[in-house]
Length: 79
Image (cartoon, rainbow, N blue to C red; front, side):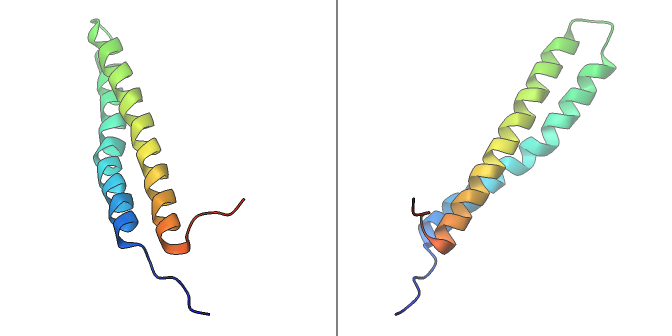
């Protein structure tokens, strides 16, 4: 009984998801902070919404990337 190897295509897909997530995870808190620094004008809401969106999207891509990498190494989860 041989062990299946790592699926390289899925591994590349997972790493690309993590590469997308990395700048979004830094951009999100920066935009949120920038929004709270601009309390005197309406840009607070623009930066706050963009920052929260970027942070949530970054967490989503990181979660998806880690799951794809785990799937590439261990195979699909059997139900």
